[in-house]
Image (cartoon, rainbow, N blue to C red; front, top):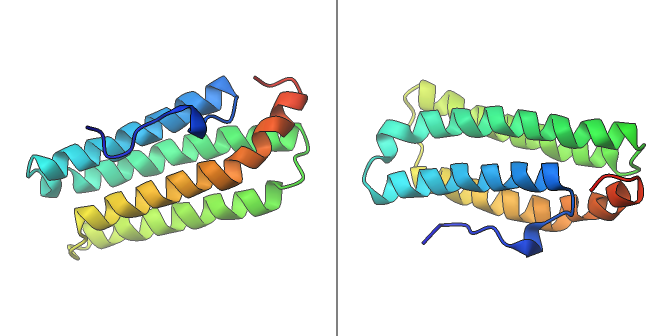
Length: 135
């Protein structure tokens, strides 16, 4: 059973963004699977790097539409993205420096952040994007 399972409650009703969100869920589930298989140490850095790269692409997509449609919550939303990138960068830095980072800590952070971000922050722009013709 996946650690975090996608369902329609997470949809922002924008196909491109929903697909990207599902990709983020997959990365988190890959980390959880590695933990369950006892391979967390081998894949933690790779998973954190994947999450960082994927998040940058995803955040760029969201922000591109926010700018295009002059979304009123853009500045606040962008700030959340920046904070996420900083946090993931700090985790990656700790891993590279050989400082122990618990895989479960990473997985929990990613799950909590993603669920909160989608269900609270991203849900706000869905109707706005739809009104501007993005579905």
